[in-house]
Image (cartoon, rainbow, N blue to C red; front, side, top):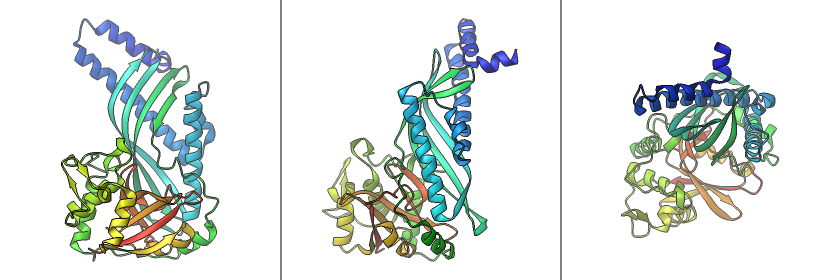
Length: 361
């Protein structure tokens, strides 16, 4: 009996629904089904994280429907992400010890052979430096998923999944001189950031509170501002909010937001970088590829920012929000949502250059 339930759990649930529809209210039945589907989804995410953590390709493969094109695409991307994360960890001199996912399910519906769901996921990555194991570090990345899960004789598998992955465009680390960089990072000490100004502290309080799906407690944007992700990105809008709402930088005629819209320097990554530098509100610390600027990144303070250049154009802005146990700068941002993430993670492709910018609070 228990084997039958395990093997055909969703079919059994649907049968219960049909039998119960005349006994219980539709609301009670819906709650029962949603809880069960949430349980299955949570376990699937947990098992997938374990496979990625352990670089277990065979286990990872078992969670996907490889008989469909969409299933193959989803599996192929997770393999690339797994490879990138572990390559980055070798460059950094760290070991990931745990990956946890916290899902906020927007909606979930049963299908005849599985279920579909829309959810926001905050994935926590916990790591230690290999030469400094007594101190544990963590960061969170927020992603928004549309997923279709099928039931088979062996269990639930992913037939289709879409989400904007922060690593999707930057999965190549061939250009990074890992050994040299790792030795430099390992030689660093932690940084005391408690003595920064109150304006900087308040800016980071805002950055932590409104970093979206990556958040620890609050996982929403500030509803006072429009979300520009559907229109191309919200990173500069969020950086502007951090400096204005948290850091108390006053709006100007050229850097401004009002009635659901903002100026180019408020909303556009390129415009934001240019405004901050040319207005005198910020100054350049370093510019170049990762090999050229990674040492200078230790000079950045909470409230400063990094501008990411791809093919000669600034495509992203993230704000420094802290440092890990080796003093490595961490960032918060939108699109995709990040909470205290190493500043270069997901930006390792050849040709990407960085503006490290100090903000004058």
